[in-house]
Amino acid sequence: MKDATIDYVLRATWQAVARMYNEQAKTFDSTMAVGFTLLSIDPKTGTPSTALGPKMGMEATSLSRILKSIEDKGLIKRKPNPKDGRGVLIHLTDFGLEKRKDSKDVVLRFNEVVRAHVTDEKLDCFYEVMETINKLVAEKNIYK
Image (cartoon, rainbow, N blue to C red):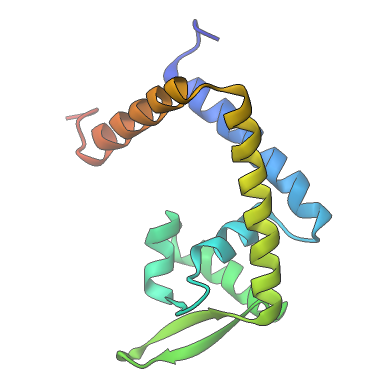
């Protein structure tokens, strides 16, 4: 893998992780996108619908489809935002909280297994590299 580009390793690894998460999500009659959405919603105070897309790095149209789907399944409910009359807060239902816990357990299990196989020192290096890549991209320092 050392001969592969950084981009290739990032994409291939993320695709493998996404497949793994989708396989696990199927066991809960769900998808990775639904689990990720549930994990992105504050379980106590809800999350403004306008903040959810940027928080998840998703386009509004894709997020709208997911929100409609999980609302139809009874996982969320929309309530007016008391701080902004024009806005909507997305809240988890009791069923949504259960499914969020399932998603959280899957993510924590993944982290637990990786941490059991990778030293803290190597993980620190991984996080440092990811932070550098994110910073380079965010600051538009790749293609000027």
